[in-house]
Image 1: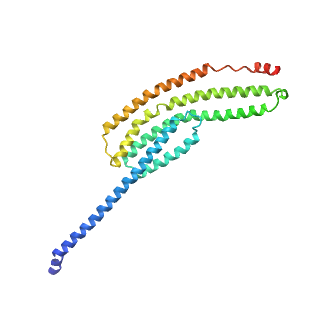
Image 2: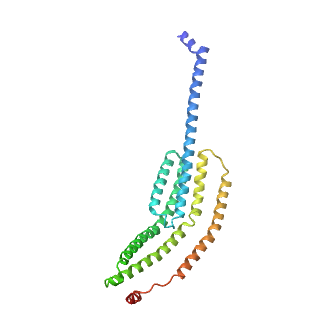
Image 3: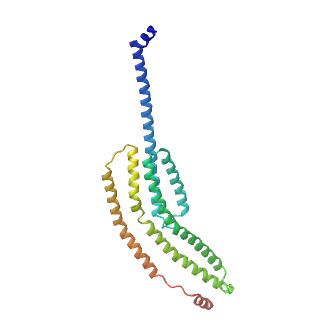
Length: 259
């Protein structure tokens, strides 16, 4: 037993054990460092992608008053936003997930408020196109061969197109009013997300300085957009004032009878 104990405490054995422990510790440390570095790289790539998706989402929101920007496009964008949110849930810390969730909730509230009048706007466009198609079909028949009810129907569709066009102008103005300040409302939350992202990928920044920088940008943005908003309001009022009145059905009939 004494010889066995002497073997264990032999300097050569102790040195070998210490060396083995050192090798194991080095391997463990290197593996952990590699895993940490890999996580940083993955987070960096995902967070930069999240910035791109967020910018695209905000750009969509601000262009919703345009007839070319449809809710179908928004649905595709929402899938990207949802996928991006899923990636964050896989790799982000609790703090980042909390600030990201607040930003996403605020964005979805902005989107929902504008999507309601936007849906009405697109429904009206479909009805306007149907009316134009019907009018085009009716115009293919020479007026001297129109049945007695054709003029009534023709006048009714013209009036409907006019009413829906006027309504769509108001809806577009409503959508613009809803989204024009969206960046100002979302930016403070986006700032918190940016700071959380930077912390997780170990890119330090003076937090107070950065928040002041963003606040200054918002203030300048408000000063830029106010003249634009006022100019668009005046232009819309001018369009309404310059709109000629449409003759009533009886006047149209009288004119048609003369032809």
